[in-house]
Image (cartoon, rainbow, N blue to C red; front, side):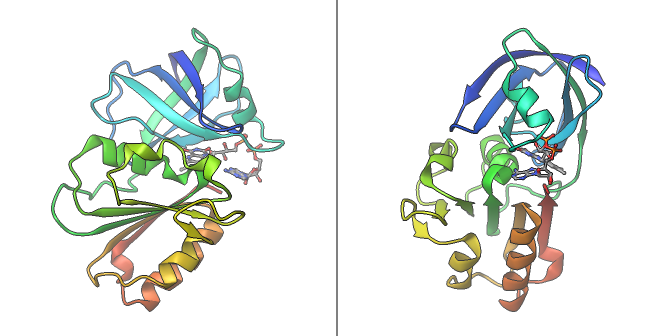
Length: 213
Ligand SMILES: Cc1cc2nc3c(=O)[nH]c(=O)nc-3n(C[C@H](O)[C@H](O)[C@H](O)COP(=O)(O)OP(=O)(O)OC[C@H]3O[C@@H](n4cnc5c(N)ncnc54)[C@H](O)[C@@H]3O)c2cc1C
């Protein structure tokens, strides 16, 4: 693992935050993740890269997990602290290019992180990002996405664009048959959305997923 200096920790909600740290010479493809731990600690966890390929720094978006080990330690980081970082790893969105086919991005919670990197890195014109959270406070930096391309689904309160889960939203949508779908977040969401998309005739080769837990 290599050492990277922390620039800052930026809170997005009471339990979610961005850690910005040195880029050094790390090259990555949007959608990839890194393994991250704090200094003098053997524990490390995977985090998707949130920042764009051309940013001079690296960022990860972390949701603090109740009783979680590493996410709690990351939240306590201060400017100048040292992170241990390994990677990048993964091939979630390696085949994405800036052509005109429709991309459906489906995220639950912090699963929005790779999509932020993908959107901020390229000129993707034809996408929709469907983000499932409990309440609007978890619509992390949603102004980063082009107008009309971000759909916030809130399951606990009627404060988003759609009141319900991403699966409830997607069941009601018509999708082009050649949709390229990218699903990221918890496995229950991914399994459910996978079934909805295949029922709508989207080919399994066009459904890509990254499971967080
Ligand atoms: C490829 C990959 C990329 C990932 N990218 C991100 C990312 O960008 N941002 C991010 O916040 N997490 C991401 N994760 C999850 C992350 O690696 C950790 O699992 C998470 O931060 C919890 O670690 P912890 O040490 O705090 O909790 P632990 O002590 O390891 O685990 C506590 C429990 O929490 C569960 N858990 C893990 N994540 C969540 C969650 N978000 N909500 C509720 N329960 C959870 C675990 O399954 C476990 O049962 C990713 C995981 C993978 C495999």
